Length: 147
Length: 150
Image (cartoon, rainbow over all chains, first blue to last red; front, side, top):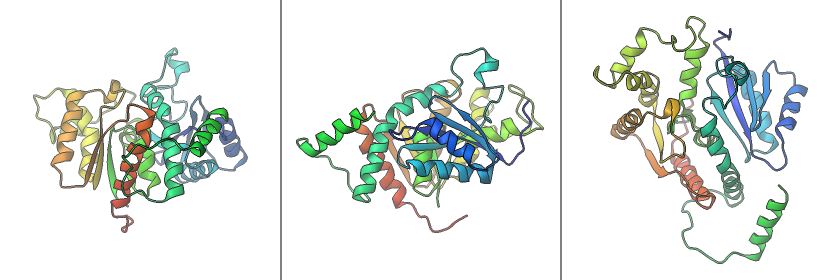
């Protein structure tokens, strides 16, 4: 069993950004002096370390593109042999399937957060369907091309 | 800052949104962390203490399958702490550790029987529905009290 102190926590950072890659976020953590363990994955990062440091690191990473970087807690530490694919003989780790489904939805959630930030608190969601504005279409095309 | 119970209990989107809007998500991951990082406990499947089944018995009778009681030993205390709840019906993937439908039904029943604000909505099936889904959650979280820092 992996020896982990009780106060250590682990966060999963999922990056769904057009401007920030997992490697950029990992480099930012390497440059910082926080004593945390970072594991780069296909969807983002897994960060393990003392609670205070991990919370500060995740806040720093979130600032890179706050509406397109998502964070949640994780029970097992990074590289834990009970979950790590290297010691389990491959295959997706438990919990990956739901994460993958949610990752598909993140671009739309991120765009909604951008819109919410631009317009302010939404009291009532719009239900009426209007024609798509030309400016809106241009924005969608630009966002698609930027991927 | 309100403690918000989320269903699905391991949802990234819900946990992130709750934290983003200044509240505390009550997710199962923290409960799991206590179980798997405590050096006095062995690796799974021997990672429960004699106290855990007793906790599970608070929510489900002894003739209920032990898997339900075991899961409720983790999730039940979260529901007791909850000051609000977000329940998302029909999540796309619900199997494995969170795939026990009887536990899910029981936990939703206990949440609904508590006198706390609850937001119930369906998981967005398409990307077009995602903004609507997000706005409803944002409006709900904005409406929760955030004065007392605990």
